[in-house]
Length: 482
Image 1 (cartoon, one colour):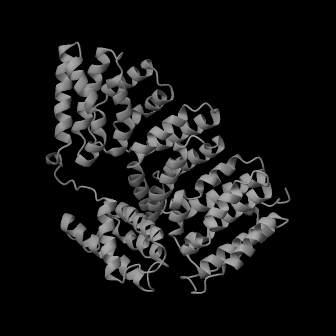
Image 2 (image 1 turned 135 degrees about the vertical axis):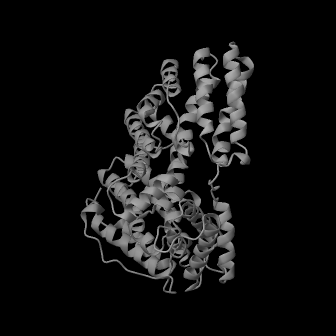
Image 3 (image 1 turned 90 degrees about the vertical axis):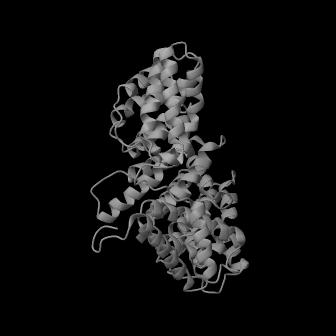
């Protein structure tokens, strides 16, 4: 293979800054010519130079729509799958790397295009980590690192996590790609851990920790599945990832039990399950129980309740743990997400347990579950979380008030933009970080709204949710925290 230079070893070309499309889109011939140069160059450096030139041309003249209008991502996918031509596979990764590195700076919506539009292209980049050519693997890793480095906490949770979940859910992925995907989840969890950064860095960690915690109900089963992978590299990385995810729990009651819980996932036998349930039954729960804790404990408790061979004493301990945990769930939305997974098992214990004491305890636990899932259980001072759909309705209204998206981009790109923005803004609202809202709206609408209107829409959305916040919590004290 003639290509020999990794992009990480080459000096970056000067960045071309574009506030928006120049209004002069490149011709299809110009794009085709550049692609041909990239794929037929006799060195990695020339191919990389071409990839940067292509990226800059698209940024200056086409914006996010250009990624789709010229079928750039489809072309990358095609080049990456050319089994007979290693240089072409490397070139495809160099294009992905150049796009991932440069595009989000000028058009942040490209993050959603790369990760979500028609399945995105992260999957082919992860698959390339298994390539027999070292330069292809290096270029793929460079691309992944470049994309990860530009993502905000909101974009990670609403773009990267869904893309990784989709990749890990498919059975046809390469094991090296699975290791890469699990590594990215670990990297996010580590990034969310408390540290000694600046005030803004710690705020972003708080945001990532809170937002990522809500995704654990989907992530934990996926990572637990990887812990049982026959490929030792995958299972080893999955265990590391699960350990990192448990740092998101932020619950002092459960923290001492985490190593045992992970061991139970790693080696799911009747003995380890009973040992874990016994340890939990010895725990005094006093801290409010939130989504991350429920995501960790619900599968374990459900397994104990629904396994016919579970001893009566373990069932007794299980229903007591369920009751004690449920009493500390203050958000009915979280209760309704997790408790239906436990309700049938507790009901079965109530009806079929051989010991009267166990049936009586199950009856109590069932009553507590039903109370927790009702809105009347909303604790004093608790505020229900806002949904992306609710944000989308407000965003849509503000866009219409400022001229609408009109003919900017196709309808799929418009819908992708609005849904992605709504998901990100939802995180800011629920964490009461309203100062971040404009940064999730204005730059992401760039190229989809007439000049000047992106800022107006962003400010209008922010003002709407600041006013909503003041209704719920009162106006902030001047000079005090938000």
